[in-house]
Image (tube, rainbow, N blue to C red; front, side, top):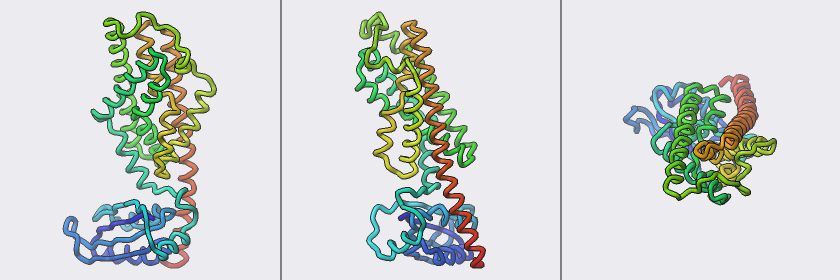
Length: 316
């Protein structure tokens, strides 16, 4: 279930209350007249089956509530109520497959800012990956994958393309377009410094366990596609445990780091291979993410259309 907190002026609140009470997937509807002061209006509380949450929120948006009030969405972890169970049964589909698009857009939007912390995480992740490459230690590569924050903007690009949100796409592209080059450049400089002080060997050497980073193949693309799809599903279904698995499956951070490391050693073939690995992973993730979201969005559009048709037949 999803909890909605709605603030709206009296006349619009009347329409919202009527709409919510008529929706089978909505329950626990409460109206507190005149309790809101900024903005002024009535407060309406209700619980909605997750499957129909975006449909109901769409109806509320049609009343122009965001322009004169607000709609807050909260996840309900547990609801002990037969009435709530009846509301969930009234909604088509399964809660685990339902997508609350407003929730997804808010979550991805938070992860697209080119902030100081985003840049630091990118740099830190690539430093860890650089040490892992030089020491040929896969465990450090895995650690770098987990630390890297790049999946947030990648997921946001997928959402932006499917939901046609140009501002979100631009912010995400800026974060990636700045974050990757800056972190790669820092990695190059760090590698040169560590070689100079003797912490890194003078020769690039061979890397038996991490050689895959600079040698992309079809399986690189295959893993990126599968991981991209799984990553988007983990975001839309709020399954963060699956997202961790996605982060350690893609080779974006290690590949970008190896571009810097190999360049510092003058190993241009390895640097080129790592750059190709990075491009393949980015393309695979975005492609799979867009396809997955497009399928989910198609289901939502059909659900919304049927809902509006039913309302029209009922004269609401």
